[in-house]
Length: 341
Ligand code: PEP
Ligand code: MN
Image (cartoon, rainbow, N blue to C red):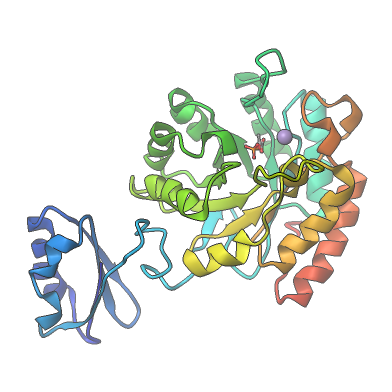
């Protein structure tokens, strides 16, 4: 439920309402805006119906939030959220590009990609240190050493980085080092992990599960936000479908849909979304045209010899060429690309 106070109301008007909400066992949220004070009430809203808050002198309007996701809901917050990762901002007019290898493999590899990505116009680096692999026999990532190498690359290039956290037991260690925590598609509904990253305050990149509905994705975001971490960026990365000619089916329709439904930024990962190197650039452009607030693209200096996802990684040269094309599409839809350099 949202309670909007009349213009000119102050904290002294809000306080008794906040107390009434608390007394009913619900969680009150105080959100003073430039013009009006907005109060949120989280929990079973039916309890508040009896209080007749809309009859109070200072209350302009009481709006129930019918959707199960409250904090992530656009009804709750009309203004788009800006999520900052260092100097990089998601959700504004600018479209940040995140580029880097599927897995961190060596110092030489991550440094080469990081330098090339920065040069081409990426503003963030990606790289998996803890890898969620379908096979237990496949390369599982360099783990702690991978994190150290990401730090080396950040020091060298100034690019902040995002890296995946697979287990709630690793959250604190990784959160101390990384600029953004990634929740992978396979873990979108790992609720203890979501709560753990929610309690860090570190920005989170939440990837859509391969079979998740929009509502399930937003409920996953709600888990993170309800722990007190509002810095969530959503990522479409393809879903399972009958269409097996691509690795996943990149569901770009969820981008404009999400932007009606939530104030959170939405980015797209066309690399995992298609798994087909040749079509990644076109789908990246389509994502920008559909309103994506950023892109995440896998780039490797030598994709043929990559330890994971070699078939879908772009070379630095192909990525640089793509960036010039993204700039044109971004401009056509009223967005821009801050190259970070
Ligand atoms: C990744 O981005 O490294 C990854 C494993 O992607 P996803 O979780 O979308 O499969
Ligand atoms: Mn990958």
